[in-house]
Length: 117
Image (cartoon, rainbow, N blue to C red; front, side, top):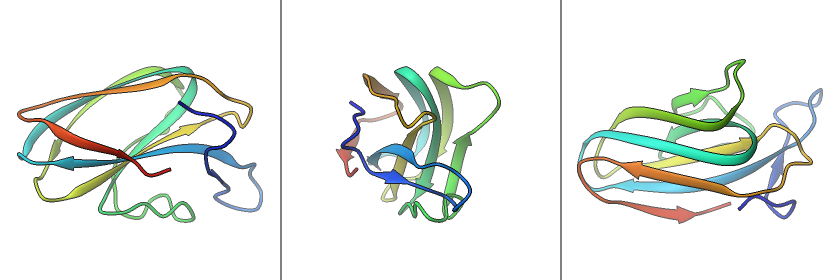
C-alpha cells in the first residue's frame, strides 16, 4: 500500500518529490521471471541489482519503465540470477497519490519479498 508515510525523494532540485514503495526480491533459482504490477494510481517501475540509491536512480539499474505510457497495470519479464538481491522500486508519479498496490511474480521457483521502504 502506498501512503504519504512512504519515503519521498527528489532526483534533483528542479523536480518535485516522489513517493516510492521499495521491495527487496530474493531469487533462489535463476531464470525468467514475470512481474505483474497493479495499482490504483500512475507509477514508474524500476528493478535494481543489489541496492537502490534514490539520489542516483540509474545506479545498478536492471530494468525500468519510465516511458510516456504511465502504468496502472504493467507486466514485464526479465532474467534474474540466483543469490542476487534485486530491489523493485514503484514510484508514484503524483505526490498526492495514495492507494492499493499489488505485485505478482511468477517464474521457475518461489521468490522472497521484503518491504524495505
